[in-house]
Image (cartoon, rainbow, N blue to C red; front, side, top):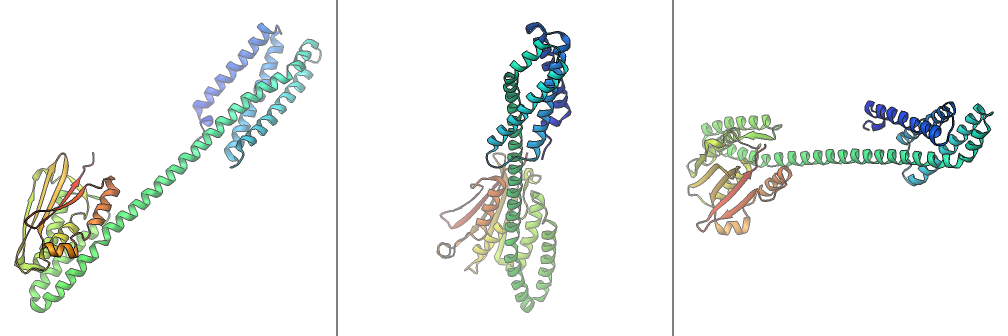
Length: 347
């Protein structure tokens, strides 16, 4: 719970000034309007306003530590009425005892008792409802902060899940390829194991990195492509074009690898001919734009689909940027499948 504004040093100084000003106004009212002497005026004003100030502090402390969830208005009214009656009674008791010989003032004191009660009640009620409003707003703010923190934790948990759930698929495929290579080409199998170990080591280092530079991501992708080149040999050809102005730009870590894996999988699926995978990294409208192109068989697309991992990537982008349009796919008349990724840059 944050500090009560009534307990800050600035608020306390303001309260003292208001108390002195209010007391001085009462004294002047008694002297120049009601024609009482200074002694009576100062005593009446100090006693009444001191009791009123004490009641305000009591209200603040009570409402700070206890507020009923239901019927708060009734609770405040009962509390302020009780305090108002008590102040009015104590004022009459003290002042009538002090000025028992001043019959004019005692008569005035008895006559003004109801009026005093009304003024004190209005003042205390205002003070009480200001406290209630403050603490309710404070509670609402705390609730919103907890909700926001919970949403952030849930968002981070989902992001981590999305980041990690795509990697086992690649690992299983690579292990299967290693197994096949150990039979037909042990030397290439050893090379692939070394590259796979380097790739996985890099993956572990990147687990805590939400954002990486284009240079880092493309280095990571190149290591992945080296592994895939071992797997598919001459069948996999690559055309990678990176605008130098993009190397320092940022994107979410491990975001591009599933897209490239998707392109290789569906480009090589159901064909023994060599294919070309094109990757273009450039700047467009102050956004990082990455395009991945691969050939595909239209019949295979209709049956199998070419969206492996793309829904997870689209969800991850939405969690980061609240935009459903950052990942787009399209196909051309000559059976080229294009996946386009756009990344807004952090300011």
